[in-house]
Image (tube, rainbow over all chains, first blue to last red; front, side, top):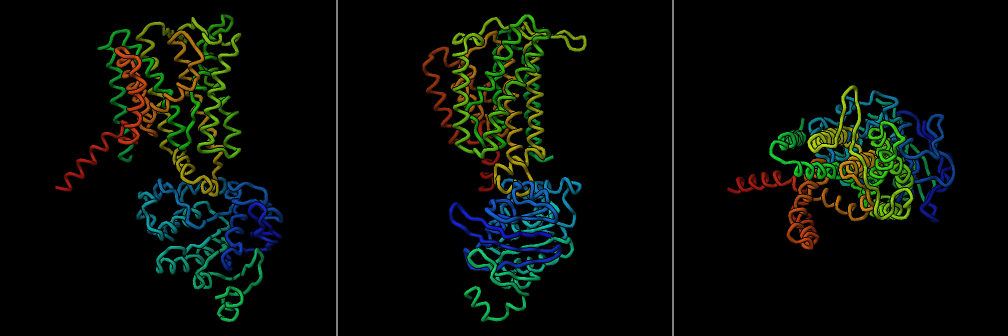
Amino acid sequence: MLRTIAVSAGYGLLPVLNGIDLSVAPGEVVGLLGRNGAGKTTLLRVIAGGLPASGGAVVLGDQDLTNAPAFRRARAGIAHVPQGRGIFNQLTVRQNLEVGTRAAKDRGDGGIPDDIFGYFPILREREAQVAGTLSGGQQQMLAIGRALCGLPSVLLLDEPSEGIQPNIVQSIAELVPRIARERGIAIVLVEQNLDLVLKASDRCLVMEKGRIVHEGAPEAFADETLLKDLLAL
Amino acid sequence: MIARDRNWLLIFAVCVALAIVYPLFADGYQLTVIRDALIFGLFAASLDFFWGRTGILCFGHAAFFGIGGYIMALVTLNDAIPFASLLGIMGAVAGAAFVAAIIGYFLFFGGIRGSYFTIVTLAMGVICQQAAVSWSSVTGGDSGLIGIPPIEFDLGGLHVDLSQDLPSYIFVSAIVAVAVLALWSISRGRWGTVLTAIQDNEVRAAALGHNAPLRLLVTFVLSAAIAGLAGALYVCMAGLVAPDLSGLLLSTEVIVWVAVGGRGTLLGPVLGAIFIQRAQQTISSFNPSLWPLLLGCVFVIIVFVLPDGILSIYARLKSLFKGRRRAQ
């Protein structure tokens, strides 16, 4: 179970998050919606340790990770797939996956889990290819596969559909809930693509000005008036 | 095994074979020239192990070479110390590693990277050279320490005496070969892969569970330890140690050797060091003032024409011919 308790954070003197309470259960996909600048990416960065929290707490199970550096959070089970994917361009696909196994060294056998290739068969085909030469969609699959190599209990996905062709967006929308269910991972999905987020999520939260202002089941967001109110769509 | 590794091992084997047959054709003086060049080659490989894999340039690497040299000199010149040669080498390696660990700790864990790291290490080299000049009661000041005895020790009933040219050449060649092979094995394995990942995107590597500052620190310390070993070997062969050995000029020269030989190849910098030093001796013998000018020109040409160093000539020619064949 991942919990953030009244988390606040910002860049310099500029506050971005104002007391975020969030909890995600194992196997659950929580979609995070909101306009640009609402603080979605910042929240993921704070959970992953890329940005320090100025207040509140980040708790995974019974471990308080609020002050832990990013590499300790990764080893505790928090995986973050950022915007832009962060693939190691000079390394091959296999080497990228191997680098991803470090987080699981204390919990697993240190190898690449076989079922990663079940989710993303293309990674097996392109194992020896230099990652920088993959297409955007393939890089996104590699980024998610690499995060799964760390056997995480929490997966933070930031805009997985960004710059990707529609058929791959579709397969990501199907894979995200499947991965959560099969591996018991708590997934936080930040996404601008409303179709994807409503299809993949069990529960949706809407952020505005650094706060969570609405929570509901994906079906509730079919109401156009609500969408207009919350997201100005 | 991938083709790149196979090519590397092939070139390594050719170099070892050349080093073995060289004494058959060379006189004592030529042997000592190559022996000293090989020591500087080891020094260049130590810099390449860090710079080549992390992309972070240390501009004061001669500080570690000098620290190793001075520790070796002080230990072997003290008659009261038993097993002076072996203890001296161990002290030189440990001393250089210790200084690198202290400085590296504050730099890496303080988030100092890129050109800031380069500038701080440049200052470190200058400070080391100044300390060697000023602390004259220990270091001998400007003139340094002379009369350092050749390496001599007993190991498992085998008496090693490196006062002669051939044994010292064989000893140095063997150490350089073993060290370069060991550094290459580390670089191409998982350690090297993670270093490449850190070089590519340190924040991402940390988010995948890697303690990037610690890994950079260990690599830096290992690199400094090898530089210290090279310094210790050099002063025993030369018989003297002076502040120049930790100075800015040597720090600059070693960067040129690595760049000319090919950064990230480990073997290239050794060849670069030998090649540049031989060229320096030949050219300086008929006009000493010509050398710095030529060295500058060679450096600029290499950076523009062969950015991956002289070791990449074969690969570039191969791709050129392939391209021509395809065009026909």
